[in-house]
Length: 85
Image (cartoon, rainbow, N blue to C red; front, side, top):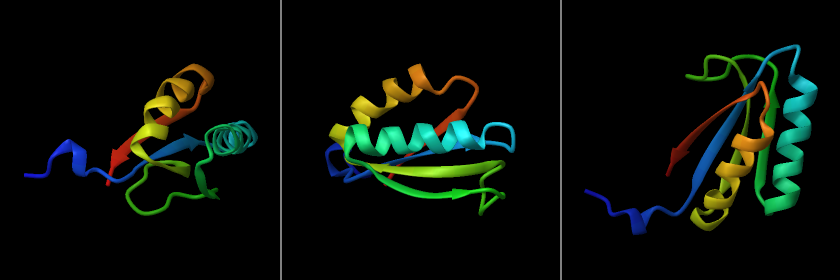
């Protein structure tokens, strides 16, 4: 079993729809700028296992501990999903 200390990165997906695409793009760009994150494409269609349109944010463990509460505060109607790698 892997130890928590072996986690090298996390990623979060911000889910949105046609009504919230501009809000999602602005939120992801603000997160990337504020935390020095890598921002993925803004997918305006379902991709892979994701049930909605999404944008991915890639973060180190240190960045992620700051990002998650920030997303919870600023997301408004958007739905973030997170995962470790």
